[in-house]
Structures are given as C-alpha cells and as structure tokens.
Amino acid sequence: LKLYIVLIVLILSIISLGSPVSDWDARSIWLFNSKRIFFNQSLNEYTNYIGSEFSHLDYPILVQTLSASLAKLIGNWNEIFPKYSSIIMALPAFIIISDFLKNKIDKLIFFILIFFIYEKRLINGDMDALLGLYTISSLILLINFSKINKFNFNNYLTLFLYLMTLTMIKVEGLAIFFCLVVSYLIVFYNHRKKSNNYLILIFGISLIPIITWKIFIYDKDIISSSYLMISDGERFIENLTNFKFILVLIKYILLNKQMFISLALLLFALSKYFSINKNTLLFMINKNLFTKEIIFIFFNILSYASILFLVFIMSEGSLNNYSEIEYFMAKSSSDRLFLPIHSLLIMCSIYLNRNIINSK
Image (cartoon, rainbow, N blue to C red; front, side, top):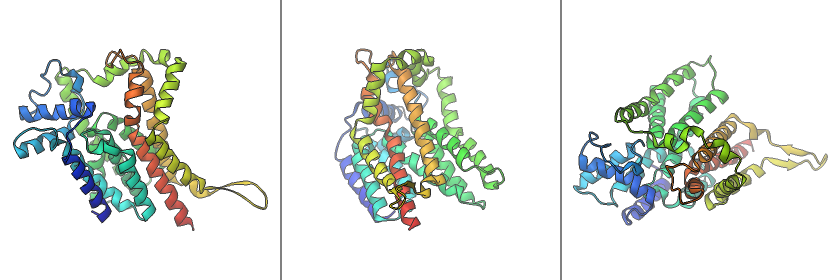
C-alpha cells in the first residue's frame, strides 16, 4: 500500500475502534445480522428469527460473516470491533485505487471522497461507502481490461473477485454490476478481441455467489425486502404524477453536501474542456472530453442514477417503510444510496483532470 493509503487506513482505524456503532441501519441491519451469525455459529438458523424481518434477512452477508469472525477472534460480541470488517474489506479496493492515482491532485480528490463525502459511513458498520469503493475499483479494472490484448489469468481472476464482491456487499451491488457490464459492452466490446469473449464468461461466473445466496434465501421462504418495497411497481404512476413528491425527491438527492462537493469537482474539471476562440468568438470543446473512458463512466452514472430514481418512485408509500413518515425513503436514504454515484462523479473528475494533463 502507498503511504497516503496507509495514513487513511490508520486514521479510519483509530476512529472506528474508538467509537461504538450508532446509526440505525448499521446497528439494526448489518451488525444485527452479524450478531446472529456469531451466536448461531452457522447459517442454519440464520433465517429462523420471527419478528426480525426489519433486518432484511435476504440481504447478502459477505461482510457480516467477516464481522462475526472478528467477534469470534476476540471471544465475545461487542459493537466496536466487529464493524472494523468494513475497513478490512476496503483494503483490496484501496490497493486498486492507489495504483490508479498518479499525482497530488488525484490523491487530494480521493482524500475528499473518503473524509468529506463518505464521512463516517466507512467506519460505522454501514455498507454504502464500501459499495462505492468497490464500484470505482471495479470500474478501474474494467477500463484497464479494455486496453489489454493478451490473455492473462491473473487479470481475469482479479476482475472476478472484485465483481463478485461488488454483488455480495448489498443488493444495490447487483444493479451496479449490470450497469458496469452493459456500459462496458456498449463502449468497449469488440467481438474480434478474444479477451472480450473470455470476459463474458467472467461476468457470468461472477454472479454465481449471489445466485447461490438468492437460492438459499428462496429455499428458506424469505420474501425479498426489495420486492416488498417496490410492490411490483403498482404505485409507480401515482407517485410519478405526484409533483410534490418528485420535487421533494429531487431536493433530497441534489441538495446535500455530498452531491454539492461531487458536482463542484466535476464541473471544475469540465470547465477546462470549454473555451472561446478569441479570433472567431466560437465556443470550443476539447475533443479529449469524448474519450471512451469518460463515456463509460457517464453511462454508469446515468444508468445507475436512473435505477435509483425509479426505485425511489416505486417504493414511496410502501408498507415496508415507516408509513407515519411522509416521503420516508427520499428523506432518510437519498444521500446514502447515492454514494456510489458520488464515487463515480469523483472518478470522472480524476479522469477529466488526467486527460487534460496528458494532452498538454
């Protein structure tokens, strides 16, 4: 690991190990599921807890099994050490990202992502910041893969491990996986390139763990909480035509510190691509704005943001939410669920800055 990554991990570790979990989702979903695994010592009784459906039994438990293992390591359960699993899980993503960051500006932007956008979400037992890290590390791997012509088993194995982990962090990871795959096929895929044909196989194999988990949950007669939330989209038209709700949703998605920082960095990077010709007074756009890497990132931002927007619309009014709180999902989850989008915006800013530097 690079020195600045070691410093980031050290700071996060001190804060994480010096404070108990406090947020509702982290304590009542992710760590509660870890606690069940720890006390049962297996998954045989994992779903046999009547009344604990609020903890979303169908959610993937890759990180939670690690949390339970950390508690097993010290011999008892508490709400401090097990949540350190998030930082351990972040290390592989840090390795890929650290190899990608080349200059001081890149590192500064990444520092802003960790401490000013993710804030405490990487150390409090929540999964959204971790999902953001694996989103951008998987994206980096796919962009690097598009430039490789020769077969290399290590490259395929690495990509498989990161994509598989992405789908097993939480349910949204599966949606991000499909956004990455579809965007890659649109932007980079060339059937004449043999490495791309092998890549299709890797995409399929990466889904085996999450499919196995879904089969396990189905076999236990656990109804998907995501299915309950969107309810076949029966409220979609009603909510879509609710002008007040749409305005509230857009407000909570856009008007928050994380989105402001992400968009500010993106707009600053984009501003370098536009100029006015002093002789002709014509508006000029730098051709480096339209590289495949930038288009690939924008495809992912637009596709995943659209999916989240649709989910918010379909889930409003769900019995799976707190019915006494109007616009519950929009108010409580929009900034958190959009962390992968913020991560992609930050990544796009880094690529834009790098293209400008390389073009000089």
